[in-house]
Length: 172
Image 1 (cartoon, rainbow, N blue to C red):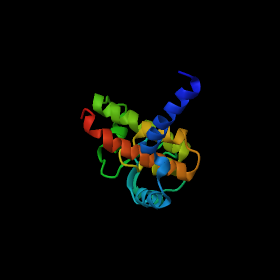
Image 2: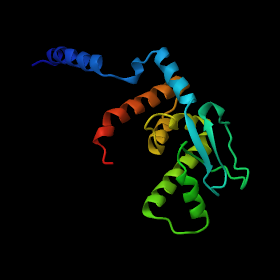
Image 3: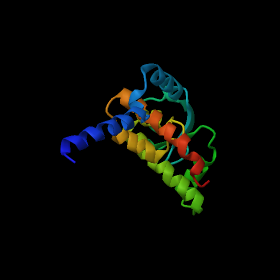
């Protein structure tokens, strides 16, 4: 078989795969505007990861670009879902030098990772973390590949879609 003949056979295969691949690049502006509006209304509990004394519930659009704890003046502010009442207690327990359980240590480490992202990216990170199923690792990946606002929201939408598709297979 000649190289030209092989390339002619391969062309329909490539067209078929690109035609049916559901990439986020196909999203129109209307869908992205809906995603953005939903993310802006998401509520977060912001907590000082350094002292655990300061905490407030904000919607994403209310968050300022630079957040500082009024008590200890630290910039390590973490974000969690708005009904998480345990994280401030865990942070204060760690701050007081008490021993944390394995589950508490895992939650504290995750909160510290989020605080690092919030310190570096500010409101953009909180917007990314507003996505359904978007955690610290996924947010870090999205922010690492950020180019512009449209690409950012496409990446958030794709991460949400991936979460919904794969969530049923995770161990709870």
